[in-house]
Image (cartoon, rainbow, N blue to C red; front, side):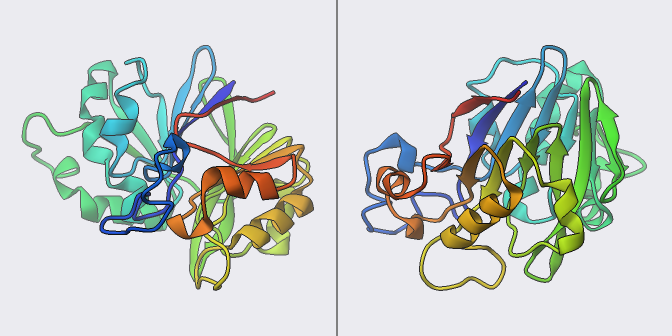
Length: 254
C-alpha cells in the first residue's frame, strides 16, 4: 500500500495570494502547497482522501484509472470543493463518496445538481454513502475505521487504515478516541503554524506532542500555513521521526 500526498497545505494554500513573506517567495518546491488531499492505493484499490479545489491540478500527473472511493473528512470547501472535477472518472462507473452526516448534508447543498431528480447530462454520477465513527467498512482490499476528532467545535472524521492513521484539521481529540489511533506505525496529522494558538487547528508543538501520545514510528505533518516557516528549516528542528510532508511525496505503508 502507498500514500501519495496530493496536497499538504492549509485552506489558503502556499504561497498565499498577495503575501511577500520568505515562505511565499521561496523557490523551494517543498514550500509550494496545494490544499490537503491524498491518494491511498494498493494493487487493486484506489481511495481519494478529500477532494479540494486543487483536485484537477493534483490528479493530472497521476495515472488515469478508477477511483474506488472518496473519503471526506469534513464539509469545508478546501476539502470537498473539487468534487465536480471527478466527472471524468465516471466513465469507470459511479463515484462512491463516503461522508459523515454533517459532510453529507454539506455535499447535498454544495452540489444540488448532482442529486436532483432530473439531472442534466454530464454531471458527475455520485453515490453518496453515510458513515459514522467506529463503524468499520471495506472498499476493495482496504479496511477503513473512521473515528472522531474536533475541528474547533465541529466534529470531523479521521481515518485508520491498518497501520496508517490520517488526520487533518484537528484541534483536539477525546480520550475515548485514542484507542483508534494508538499503536499506528505511520501517523499523518495536521500542524498549522508556530506561535499564536488557533481556535480550530493544533500548532506544531501540539502535533509533536500528539505524535508522542500515538507512539507512531514515523509522523508526517500536513496542513501547515506559510506561518510555519520554510520547509527545510522546520524539518531541521523536528525530531528524526517527525517531518513536514510535501506535495507529491509518496510513502510506502506496511
